Image (tube, rainbow, N blue to C red):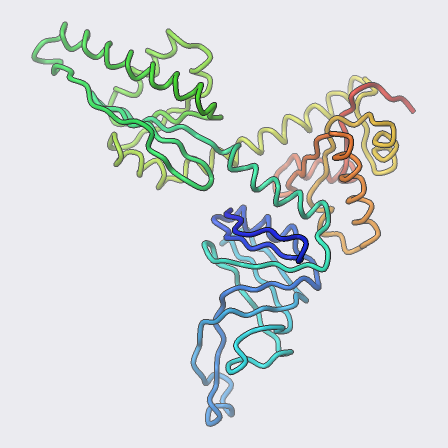
Length: 362
């Protein structure tokens, strides 16, 4: 997601959703009464066409509505919100009439709130941080050429590419083996240097034929730490063409998403592990978590994101206060998606749990 502008003082954020997860993030922070401004199309009738319901021309325009209904459908990445029009082209729309906006990927949307809750801000902060979590290094390699690129949520940057002189295997096997070893040494050195400089979470090793597999084995025998970060992918070409193929498969996005899901799963596994071992270093339920926060014992606060969709404003204020309290004591807060199993399990615990710095017993 690209966050273009964030102005909580004046009550709005402006952003561009880039994938289905971004649409879901927007859905998580919306509530009835918020105002949303986005591009849409609306049927505009001339006076002579007003008798027929299906008459008129559809015109693209930017409209702002005050939300009365909204829904997210994960299948098809569909986010819709309906409400009364509060702003738009005065010659084309009547304020106070109803309109439904279907939000599309890669289109700008502005969200207005009377007050941004801490939890809602937290969702956007997590989206921004995802750009760092999603930092991935891609190496496409074939025969005697290598191309290195860094991918984040917002950009792609080719860092290095080069070609080495390697004799063909069938013409001189000994020379080919020697020169291939030199090529692999050079490529490994570049990879190690880039790993130190950018500390990517994942390295994608891609290319055609046996070269990527042989290079993977070469690394395995020389750098056991680096090899743990590498994921191999088969593509039909090396170089920049192979890089485009990796991106067309949306592998960086899938890897970043899987990383987040795996992280949330590990946290919840730790919750159940500590419950089972009766260590006293875990608690769940709002009252118990509130007491642990009051004692400064919370290390990681876990909240299922269905707590954002509760209509009870007093309950939402309680959730906000807990998040603010945890933040003030340098605790970590993790919002867990109920779209995944770990979030569902947390919801069954009441939607909130905490890993503690030290034991607390009832």
